[in-house]
Image 1 (cartoon, rainbow, N blue to C red):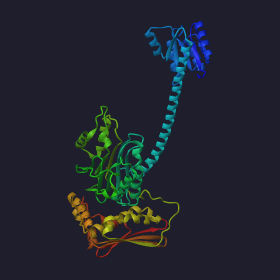
Image 2: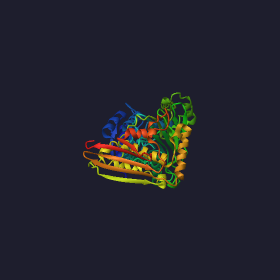
Image 3: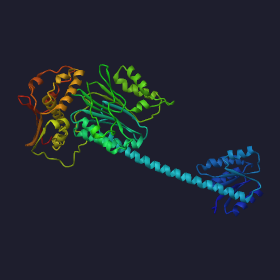
Image 4: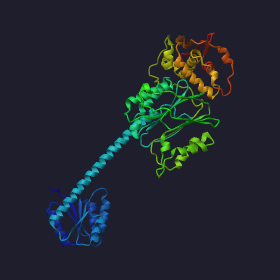
Length: 565
């Protein structure tokens, strides 16, 4: 049964107006009447009727103008208007519909047809109300979803930016294709002083693409803080992504292991566009993809070998996601590799390259077809002061140093596959006085271990690293000798001692090698720009005490603290 409606009748003829009002009232509706368009507008504003029966030709204001104004003032609400007309010309009937009419009925009025048209208009009102209700419900859900995504993004950004992306030597621009960025950029300083930078690009866009970045960032920062080597971190990230991502998802990534003091750049690129090392002399070295993306291969098939390159202060490292190359202009043409290479070829100052690429992308007037990331690292040691690594809580309860000692013995299989150093750092952090020196201590320990393994057990001569070719040959020989190692060992002894109002940490490291003349190495002057001869001098500078066995097969360092340190 049709519910009672509020219906406005607009008719200048008193007899027709009374007749129509009687018919509509007998059908159970509430009736309002007006003699012209101006009166109709006033009644509409006051009573907000649900339907209007409008005469077309009236004095003061005709039905066409009144219909347009009523529709305008109704806004989103559907107020059907049925024109009452004796007009029969198609042009005039079209004019009724063009003025905002939804239907028309010819005079004289047939009550049955009028009732049917009122019912039809009521069904339209119900449909409109349903659509508006669904629209409002969708809008509410969308607002709630956006609020949840913004909250999740705030958490994600804090996790992803927990490292040192704000360092003065790192510049980056990221332009997400959606609220969430499928590109992830992480940077952290390792305890031994290296800078780790990872740029990743997950398949897809938005939240599904970004959700994999949370475990990736957690693994990256957690393992970096504990002193794990870059290849161990990379292997763990791949295993975790392989476990949690659906089959169709993976992460193209470039991982930079930047060790300024050693003058070593290690690069792993799995599926991202070429990055570039811009050397001071003007040489440009491409950091090409040599691996499958992260999360594709099982652990036993994953290749964690890094490309190893010589590095000097003042070099610049440039990385980008494929969103740079896939950016499209208004005609749909991609930015492409050709334009990028033209910028690289025309560049005369590496310090300006980042800005030149960014300006060219803006001038391209394109739209992003994918998440876009552009990253530059200026290689400088001064920008990376030693500090407590991210990921170690200070805790509310102060820890007390105890007298204890530990020994680590590594033989061939362990030397090939294990890294004892991340196990030791948490031990040092149990002593509050050593926490602020954790990075410094870890740097010394790393140099001691590298010296014992590479020069002691493997018998490598650092003078091989006299130039770029020798540098690459040195690390090839290291891999080959380590793979073929059948005997030899490294012993590490750690002692913590309480001494009155303070204490000391002593680290002794021995190897099975032939030994060397420590004093002679320390006395030799390193060559300008050389890639060797820095490790022992660094140990001597950073440790409170540095001593060695006469045969050079054992080195010892000590660090001291006072109770109020």
